[in-house]
Image (cartoon, rainbow, N blue to C red; front, side, top):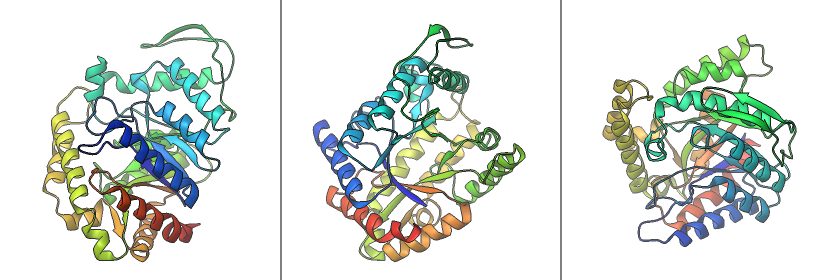
Length: 349
């Protein structure tokens, strides 16, 4: 099982944008040195107090030039917010710079707020996503082509560069809604899954649908699943529970507000589902978080916890959210990743 880190280049309260970049790149350098497999980059717009990661292609290129081993990926590139030809050019450029150490994670984003600012109706997100992916894959063939869809109309486009990796960088799609799982299984797509809106029991059911569709479509193997999950490694079980407590409460409180605020907006899931997810997160106890939403513990405790998740969900990789609430001090975040890289991850290799 591979281990990655999920990065948002968080801006701490009272901290500067420059400090956010320095802290993020320090984690990248340590991940390269300590054997972490991948750094996955978020794409977040219009959140200036929380993150500086609005341009993952630029940061991915920087990571590629400062590392020799670490893979870099997008988690996720929000396809409906951009022009697919521009995205194809930029991501091919990243793959060339990284000499194939690039993974193209894609999705729609679960929340409409960036769409509202960009002036793109969220109810168009699925259609725009599907058309954008078709355009990108066609552009990466390296030949002139035209395309006519509902949202994108292209005449005689011939992009340069094309990807280093042939026929294209590995793809991975974010699966956040129930209907996405069987669709991605039918298409034979590797997926990201998470525990923000779903718990472990929800994921187990949906992953069964994903794998059923995968097998029915005749794809080889058993699918490919990467779990994004808050992980904190401490020197003891007590430290691992106490040190990230304030931060994880802040994280799920923010997630609760996002689900509640987006309930009822056009293009999202049923209002009752979003409202219910928001209410559950708001009322969740710390004990429930430990059981259903996070992986906190000493090295031994994390090995046991992740082993159960690997067996229960059939995981191929884990992507650690090291500080999702943004309140864990930088030295503790770094120490947690060191334990994860040196004492936990080798157990799964």
